[in-house]
Amino acid sequence: MRHATTSIMQVKKLQQQLQEETDLHLALASAVEHSSSPSSDSPGKLPNKAQELLDCIAGLEITVSKLEQEFVSLQYQLSQERNERRLAEYHLKHLPCPTTSLLNSSVAYLTEPIVRPCNEEEAEGNMDNMLPSEPVIDKNYIVENLWHHPNKLSEEMVLRMRDIFIFLADSSKLSSSENLVSTASPHCPLANFLAPVSDSPIATSLVRNPSGAGAYDPYGVSGKVDWTCSIGTYSTAVEVSWLSVGKKELEYAAMALKRFRLLVEQLARVDPSQMNNNAKLAFWINLYNALIMHAYLAYGVPRNNIKLFSLMQKAAYTIGGLSVSAADIECTVLKMNPATYRPQIAAVLALQKFKASDEQLKYTIDHPEPLLYFALSCGLHSSPAVRIFKPENVNELQEKSMQDYIQASVGISNKGKLLVPKLLHCFAKGVVQDSLLPDWICQFLLPQQASMVRDCLSRNKWRLLGARSFSILPFDSRFRFLFLVDDRNSFT
Image 1 (spheres, rainbow, N blue to C red):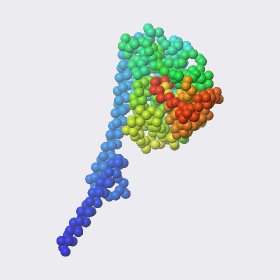
Image 2 (image 1 turned 60 degrees about the vertical axis):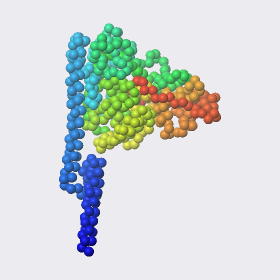
Image 3 (image 1 turned 180 degrees about the horizontal axis):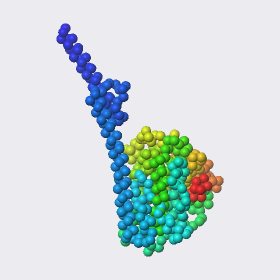
Image 4 (image 1 turned 120 degrees about the horizontal axis):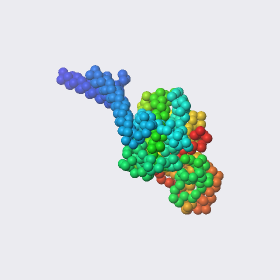
């Protein structure tokens, strides 16, 4: 009898130990998963030593996070010092002129990490006498306190970047070969323009405007019927698909980037959490487009979608004390999924699993906005045009952006099929069935366009043959920005 009692007590003791071990395991697993010490309502109470260990781990995580931030800051400072040295060496060798001292602190910002502001504006004072027809930066323009008005700040950033790109793309201001400092290639940042002339060819460039004042087709493809007489707002868009950087262009960009730095620095004092949803939406759209343009100047044009996404993760601004990258803006703040129309990065996104921090959650918009497809530009040929978004018209302008994009990008093939860009098709899949897509598109086309589409589809009777009445144009990843500079609702 005594033996049985002893056995029962031993079993109960073992069961209690097992339960304690199980509770301890669950508590530790929960603590690891949430990166914090278990709460008081955990399945079991942790031993003091285990609790101390978890508290120590939590403290180490905070320390590591601070060290990482300090590491990024030191990288920036190191890069800045190197750029200043390279700039000084460059001017000593290649630009012996009275204005050298004015340039000593400018072009370096072209190569600064975008985690901090890049400088943009150092040569405009020199440009006044050299090129009277070139855009001149208003010296009296006050930019120091725009952080009080975050939306105005983001709008100004887009305007300044637009001016830089259009100036560098204007072939009418190209320097002669003997004055060229160097030239750009589609995959080289402006930093490489500091190389000696003998080290690089003096020919090709990266960006250009369409020649001529007449209408043109910004999304023209082989076999597409010409209907440029009725493509709407995009008929007057300015195209930038290559950059020319001679001595004068480099000086202008340096001066412009210096002014741009003043704008970027103010972002650290902006608190997007205090904005309403419309103000947030307009702010982040403008900031994203400006950041992508800035990234191209600093890092060069990526060769494919994977490298583009890598650039988007690398290019970041400090906003309200938080480092926010272009990828963060698109995938977290604006709650988008770029993999839907750029499937090459689907695997990357699956591995990244972007998750907003508690601080970033305060910056996010209230709900996903499907029309953002037509507001954000990645600087690719199939991207929509860049325009300014303001809180008072952000929703209406998103709808207009979609309509303008449809009118400019949709077309008819010489075989009588409707041509639909992949970006538009990916958006439309969540709105309308493929069988009704042509009719849905027609409601956004200009009357002349819609009539041409209906007549063409009616004559060919694709539906009666059981074939799809449209073809999908693949996403074109060649470099190109479009600017709607004459848009009254945008650039004014």
